[in-house]
Length: 617
Image (cartoon, rainbow, N blue to C red; front, side, top):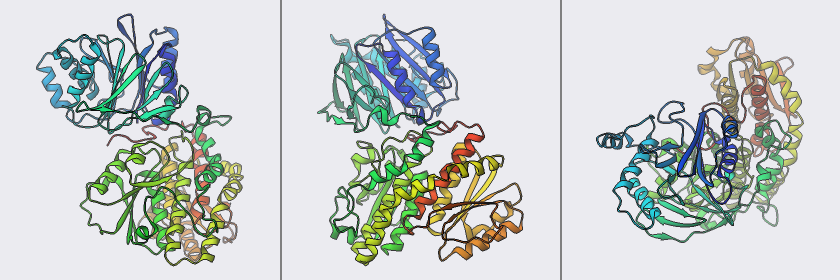
């Protein structure tokens, strides 16, 4: 949610900041703005809508200056208006701020400031924080170094704040300074040879430098000229650790594809190969992971596993739950991360926690992890972003290694989470009672996933035709059983996310327990119907739908024989091992949702109201 870019260097700031904001569009936003410091004043441009519109505005009236801040806003406090857009200026126009997060006690602070004759032009909590910093700046004793005064003012203001924030602050009275701070909202410092960039996401700064410092909660960075210092809220100095970003700006380009989502769907064979590279034993009978930080004996002693995640990542956890219980015979529970920390859930002492988050910054997942750790449990993470908060704070984990995912609707990150979940089930199963023979067969299946995905992607044109025919419907049901029920949930979620069609998912047998009341010729059903022990049961559910005039799309395996005429549309995927079936079955869901959304004229990569990384509660 929201995007932050701050620049200090020797080049014109506006084009660099606008380019960074453009690269953050996938995070979700409804307005954008910049504030550039030049000639003793702030030049501010902001507007509702896309960054492209802001770029045109700035091009018509170029903004000079070599330091500035920019922001893409996803509305929280206050509606989508220009007044509520960032950056915000203080009453006296001397301080500018951009902010991600939520200041929970802003109303109390606002009341205090109003009693001291401060006025407000927006409805935002951010403007309140800006004026609070201005208030403390005026109270701070003047020093020879105005920047020290600004840093002290920001630190003092943040001591009064409850909530989350990632902020960048400029002051006309400290013209060579930029102050940034984070608490619960990601901030990254890009370190170039003659410039420094602050951003909420690596994507915004990787075109400038691949040397980055991941700020931790409670840290402030003071940029003066092209040097920086990091300190904590209690003024302790911090020695920065400079990491190297392992991907380049070219990795995040769209290439010849119409949308990032389509590009990332077709990147999945390579992404899955990267996710499992080097992670099999020498005899190819099991998986291996280098970052779990648990001995085999410790892992074998775990009597229960708990997966916490949100949205798409939770669906991956649900599939993993089925596979671990099926192949390792260990009880597993999945929970919404947003609910876990507020429930007083009785927990077994020998429980191992997993959190799943592509970005590693999902605030609900972070909070669930911290709650589990607070209660003394070890937490491992499945995560795609090196240096993210989840990656740094977890007790161990597994990186996905699929590269940047730009599309808001997750595709390659989801299938890699499914793959890692399947590998975990194998790893734990082989520690228990899975035989070498079964393990070898399992590994062979896993290694074949990229080619099976490539084969499934060849059905894209067929699926596109189906999607075009079904794009007129406004309600759909998705139905599957066992490990494919979470895939039905994911299919329904994808369709909702990018085409705005109302879609629901159920275990196929649940259709007769209420949802069948929705069935009519205007409510199609998408069935996942592989050849397995429940094949005939799913066929019976399909016949119930057919008898009531409901259109049916069947996604079935090549070894299955559907009764003739039962499905109105059939999509065939390769027959495969049970552990990898969820991955292969996901591909048609992604393509179907994509082509439906395109046919309906939706903005696939930037769906309304959504953000790639949800960093506010």
